[in-house]
Length: 176
Image (cartoon, one colour):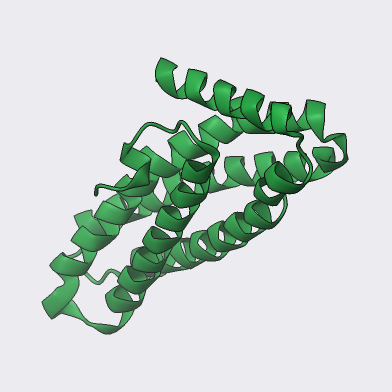
């Protein structure tokens, strides 16, 4: 996949682009889960491959995006927009949940893939349930971040603070 997540993360606009790309992958994951449930054995291999690809995308791109937020954005906002402190704590907690859920889905996918010749039943249900929970949590998370933290960049920060935030993001991106 070639998109904003494969480019250096040097601008604030890039963060919003990353959210849009992550949202597209969330839709792709939801679609793969839906197909896994309703298309049956004939499409099983194709649907498992699609699911695996979306999870790899999240493992690579979502996790690094959250790291940038946790290491740069959130500490910056704690200092410069203290009224967002409790929201930032919530978003950080959601990051941890998203990472754990992503790991669990990968385990469930591996378990299901190993047993796909026998009745998959429970493994498939766990995979679908965990996948849909991940979809809804991530969509909600992206919305809250976009409407609070990302909007605060434009509305709450002074010009010099915005420049400093961009400088820190560029420095962080250059170290990766």
